[in-house]
Image 1: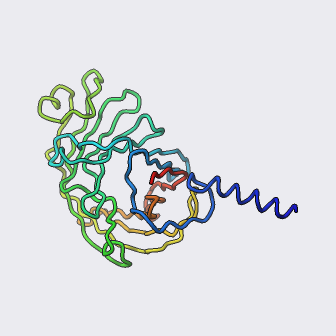
Image 2: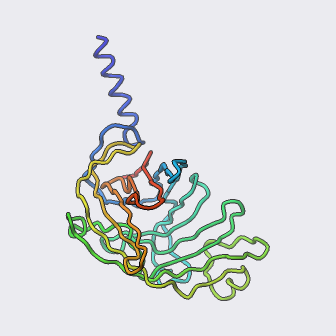
Image 3: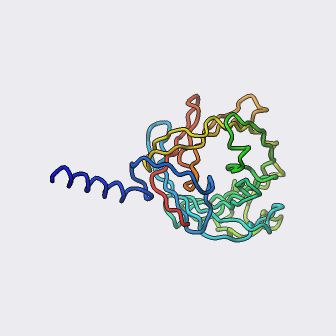
Length: 259
């Protein structure tokens, strides 16, 4: 009877920790690699190179036009809030472009004043993950290139906050002290599918994940390399560098995904 009771308690504990982020081995084989739906939420543990750690919360808050000044301002996308909690943080607009999930627009805010300090968009929009059979096949490799357009507040007059939905035009740049960049040099990345079923353990559980390598700025003298682990129906469960530089690691702790 005691053994049966222990078994029941263990089963109940694992069940309680499942989708919310327990340690039960989990394999999810259905759904998109990055499920975007209003209310979906991911909590990550970020470990810095010096082994200090912090929590990052990412939540899909709404579906709305991208806005801003880029060529995709009228495109309907999901608004993702990323910060220390699900109330304040940076904003990105992400959505589906065929089989690809891309980032259309990013807004960075000062954590102490709430002022907008940077707005950027890339043309074409930069990739987060491609869900197609071809781009999720083992050893498949492809190149991505885009131009990053940035406007940032090197000096903000009076520390005035900028409306997150306001376009960055010449008047706004002058009024807010924003410094506009006509466009950074072209970014070139090489992506490679390293594994289609990599067993990875994070605080949220153990998953069989699609592991993708990304080498960024391949045309420069100092390219960087990162790895991403995606799980169908869950999203990104891990992100890490190649260990050659001072890098941080992100690991999924808890998640909420709506059907």
